[in-house]
Image (cartoon, rainbow, N blue to C red; front, side, top):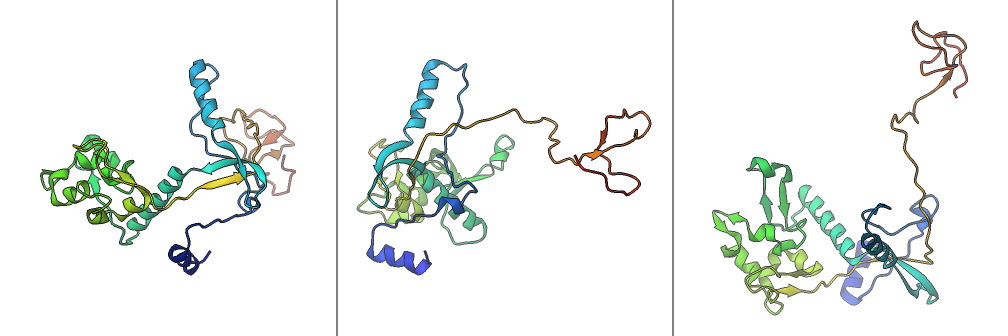
Length: 250
């Protein structure tokens, strides 16, 4: 899709459906949903059950783009896609793009210096995150400053103040931790993106113990005589032949 095509859909349409060929993405054409975290066999039964339920929830009955019944799988959820879009905006801002953001600087204190700066583009609750709420701007609590009040006083009918962080109006935001609690500003997302796979089938994923010495990339040469003094003769060596003649690599 071209940029002009995207603009045309934004002006006149409401849905974009792209169907890439997974064989162009990975060698075997197989993709799997993102499953975060693992559970050990020794874990409590309730923990194992929760993990299994979370895994099963990735699959659901539906129809493919041709209208045929199919087992579907969520490859990337709406929330995950929103996070990816914000990450792209944050990366663009680092490159100098004029992307609006409000960030908290943690580098002044030794204990938090490793956090660097965290802005509304990367904080979990965007511009209404507690990191911003509990920060100071010019010595004042952020929510009591002009900028902070513009965000906290914004409402669906009067959302001009939220334009300080326009990505909140696109991806959604909820001021759930303010003085008004759950009655704070709530903006539903106007952009929904999701990646769904069709024709899904459960598959077992095998695993094995990795070589701790990581010698897979080491060249092994056939040795026909003992090497340097003190080194046992094992019939192979990692040193190439000193005489320059080619020996078989094992």
